[in-house]
Length: 330
Length: 122
Image (cartoon, rainbow over all chains, first blue to last red; front, side, top):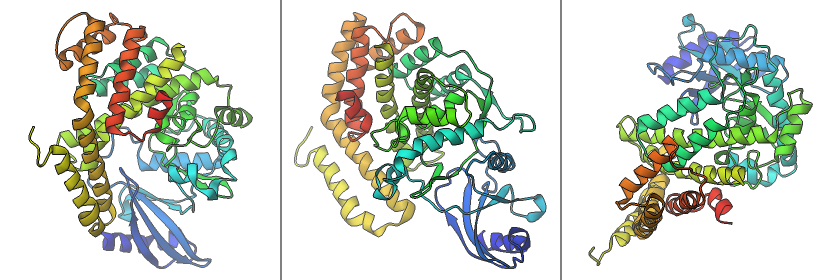
């Protein structure tokens, strides 16, 4: 498979770098769970250039929620035009390229591991700025005009709750904390606002950070959709993405810095209470997602111990829900 | 349950084998899965050790809340159904206290180092 890809990319080399003729050091990167990620170098007039290929696994129908790679590449280019840090899109693969559904982007150096962002000394000086940066970047993404964008799903709080409650009922677990959370979330669903383009998975793991710069690139756009801006702001604050960090925003920052950055970046006023509502919805959602990952073990689709054990992370989200509901009801 | 060895000793033996003998020979994805396997066994170990007392305590709380007898599965189902149909208020102090105590016990079994456990227990 790698040989075939090597020759397909070599044929494409002139399109990937000016004067490009050869492709070298092609290797598969781990990390992409639903999509393949390949790293390679192409030589060109300006020297070697490190590129990344993101491709749908051949023969894999893909995840039901994913928007498709051409749409991803399109949104990344739109975000780039708004000034948001994203990897530069170099080429969107066409059928005649023989690579399948894929695109090529420039490699961005940096760190995505939440644990390192939250703890490593290298990030100590930039860490206090990260929440504000994340707020400003989300404001840029949310400002992308809807006109001309692909026809992505639109989802408000009640749509999201309905979707994940249905998944929970299909799995068949009986967990009183989820019942309490569904009811609480439905009773307090905020009035819908004019939907904006959401990244849909803006959190540690999908954000590339550099020690001197802070946010270097926003990655993994496959869950983009239209919805409530508070949903993107809150997802970064869900405890699962804090990696043990003491601060609420990604383990590295404070709510006020995130919301101030968002407002300074041109985003509309988002009350903390609305963010906390969506954070609660986010803990429910990640808890249900852990259950569905376990379900793929139970059905035999993925018999790995990792899929089995992730089912035991559902309780982490339940304990977060209990804390959030306790604070909201106090 | 028999002793010599106990179930816990068997689990410890397997954890020791994976960590000291098997895992060092594995790479990449397999090495990662070996670590997850050790975590899974450690959770099973804690469930054997602490699960029965946690479940017995939960049954006592559920009996008081629901005013009826039954085993854990029945009573837990009744609580879930009551919260779902609105006949039981999850914010009621006795219910909220039960949910909190139950999930603290569960996370102590599943992921005792989880930050959310410390956040809730202080």
